[in-house]
Length: 457
Image 1 (cartoon, rainbow, N blue to C red):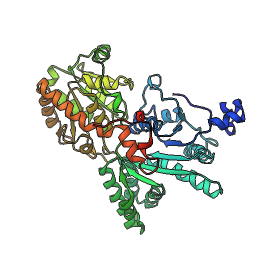
Image 2: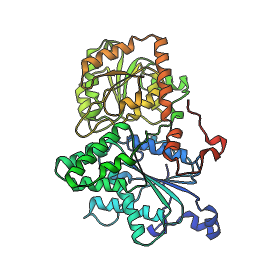
Image 3: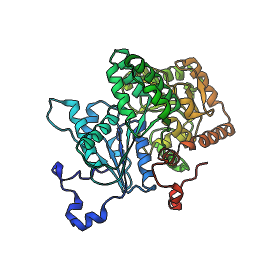
Image 4: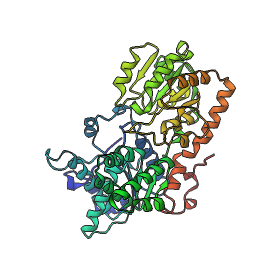
C-alpha cells in the first residue's frame, strides 16, 4: 500500500510535475472516486468494504480512486485494533491511499486531523476532475466531506462533486443515542444535518435504517426538526461490499499448509474470527465451548484483536485448548475459515454497539467449511438469511448445544449447508453492491467492456 505525493502546497513535489505540462494534461484523470473511511490497517468492516468498492470502481470508468484516511500513528494512538502492517494486501494500480497529516499545533488535538482531512478534500474537489465522494461513518467522515464542500462553495469555486454518505449502526448507537441520552440534542441534530446534506444517503442494513429513523424521530421531538420525514423519503439500504473472489475456489493444499503452520488440522477446531469486543460474544463462546462435548475433541481458535482482547484472554485462563491469534493476515483469513469445523459469532446487543450487519459472517459463508453459528442480533439476519444455526444471544448453554449440533452433521449435510450459504452470500459481492449503490450516478453499466462484468448467481 503506497501513499502518493499530495502536491506542492504541502511541501512535496508531485511526480507528474517533473514530467512537464504536456504530460500532466495527458495524465489528467477523467473521473475520480474518493472514499473517506477508516481504512487498513484498522480491523473494521468498512476498511474491507472501501477496498472492495475501490477495486470495482476501476472497472466502472473511474481512472483515479483515492482512499482518504488517517495517519498510521493517529490510528495507533486511538487504540484501534490493527492488522499487522507488513501483512496488508496491496491495492491495484490506480488506487491511491492518502493519509493527510494534522494541521496546526498540539493545542487543538482532534481538530488538527479533521482540518487535514477537510483540507485535502477541498483540494481534490477543486482540481477540475468530476468526482464522486463517499464517506463511511458519519462522525467524523461525513462531517469532513460536508465541511469541505461548504468551504468550496463559500469560496466561489466550481466543484463537480456528487456525495454519498453511508451510515452504520454505531453512528446511531454510539453517537446519536448517547447525545439524546445526555441531552446533547444539538450534537445529534448536527450529525443528521451533515448526513442528509449528501446527495445520496444509505444505511448498511434495513436494521440500521430503522435505527436511523427511530433516532431521527426522537431528535425531531426534542428540537422541532423534520429529520424523520427526510430519512423516510431518502435513506436507502446498501449492504456492505465483500470481495467474493478472495473466498471462492480456495486451494485445498493452501488451506492445509496454513493450518499446519498454526498447529491446526482441518475440521479440528471451532473458529471465532472478528474484532474482539464485548458485543461480539467471545466470552459466551468460551463458556459454551467448555460446556460442550466439542471441548474434548476440538480446539477453539479466537482470531482477531480489539478492546476486549485482554479480558477475553484472561477468561481463557491459559487453557491449552484455546488458541489466540492476533496476527492473521488478509490472505490467511479465508483459509482459516474454510478449514474450521464450525464458525461462531455469538454477537449480543450492547449500549455502545449492536451488530449492524456482520461482514465476517458473509466472508465465512463464501469461504465454505463448517456451518455458521450466530444470533439474531441487529442486522445479522439480513447477512445470513436462513443459512446459519441461530441461538439466543447471551445464552452459553444454547450456544454449547449448537456447537455439538454442528459437529454432529454428516459430511453430506455440511457440504449442502455450505453450498446454500455460499449461494446466499453471493448477493453481497462487491460488484453487485457497487452497481446498485452507484446506479444513476454513472454511465449505463451495459456500455462497459464485457470483461468488467461479474455474474452473480
